Length: 191
Ligand code: ADP
Image (cartoon, rainbow, N blue to C red; front, top):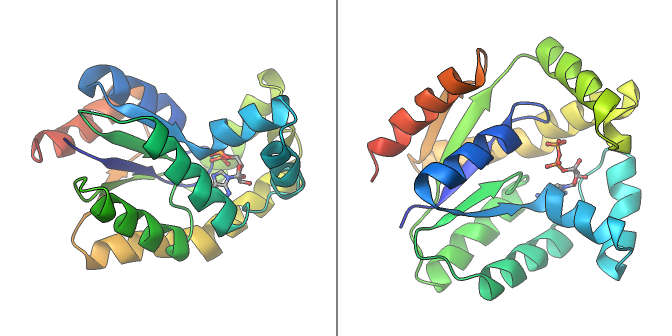
């Protein structure tokens, strides 16, 4: 089993690379963004709660997100492992998932960080906003807010995994296949 955290700012390409990793390594996908969007679309109580945070470019509170991930892992056992996409996004979430994997006797996660500069990120998100119906991608001020939240609240997650010697930086620039080869190169060493 291998558990991976696909890490990086909004627009780094986590969703695209996750899909390719799932196919190649037969992993179970946990995307907190997708789970929240599914709940918002179906107007569940979780979706209604998350919406105000998401529309403003803020993080949904840790306790809500952590519980959602725990429920998902409990309901979805995985033989080969999980790919965590967009989670953990705060130091509190990082500590929570480390303990949870340990409690469930699952392997500690490796963090793969996709590195992309801010100008490129904003360009990609505005482009995505034209075709997706994501409200949070259509307003440049919300996009910038998400980048600021990333720098302030999410970037420290990488330092936590650096300290644990489980973090890898990967350039997120170039074409999708080239980036995928870089990621697979790191994973191959841990299989
Ligand atoms: P992005 O495209 O900005 O990387 P996602 O599609 O992963 O974002 O998630 C969309 C929104 O859902 C985030 O801006 C945030 O409000 C919320 N969200 C997703 N994952 C988390 C998380 N781990 N903790 C708190 N909020 C989250």
